[in-house]
Image (cartoon, rainbow, N blue to C red):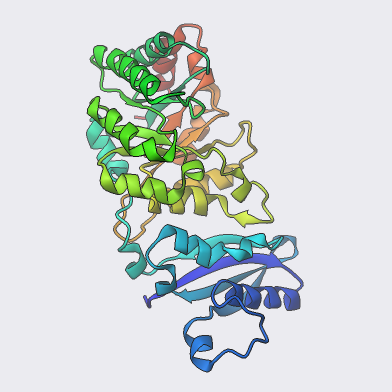
Length: 364
């Protein structure tokens, strides 16, 4: 493949208007001048994006491919986003639906530290999905969280994570809470991983991650749309930890289907590029309106070939019950994480029985 990066957009029609918009994107994202600006031939040929053919799609829109010199992305996530969807993101009706990367660009990114194969090895689990839960609700005491985490571990759960709204008021409170939950899970003797939420002031994130790993834990939950995709990439490149990426605050990028970034591109490909071993997203049928097709596409992109990057785990959550585990198996297969929160924790027998019930539904 040439050293060019191919970005695919959906833009409003009719055809003449779509072509004009595509040309405007090609200029705006590179030289940022009007179409009639007298560019030197060299800049027009070597810098400005090249507009491909327009293809009509549903809803009166058109799909167009624009290819850019990969060197303009600089081997950095922030520069990539600025190049492909910087000013273009401000235009109504423009949606970035795909990016095809040359190997020269992907070589700058190590990707997930563990990925599917590495996390299986870490847990010693083969041949089935993994079961995860979240510690809820906010306002519970450290002891209550620790007890719930331990019960889940005894029931056969694989990963227990902080809920994304658990953000400790101080560094000391973080250390105390994490150590209590970690000790409770470890005391069960079961091979269950606890992932604290890595959040707080930017200048404390590395120190908080150091505390987590120093406690013998193997990974963290992180919200890349809040702390920054490149922040996660940087942390993952410095520390051999599992990064479980939560989608909090990212909905404005994809929830409006006529604009933004396509669900699976952001939650699948870009999360993986930034080092997410696990990408969490709302399951179809839950509170957030994702369709089965969108969820399947996220799972596909999280595990599809992407240079030498390891595959990420898709972790659908929400909208899950013992009655729809069959569709979970059908949609996501064995290399997926069932993230079951409230339904598991509120099981009549408690988190231990809840974990046992969901484990019993897993394909083997």
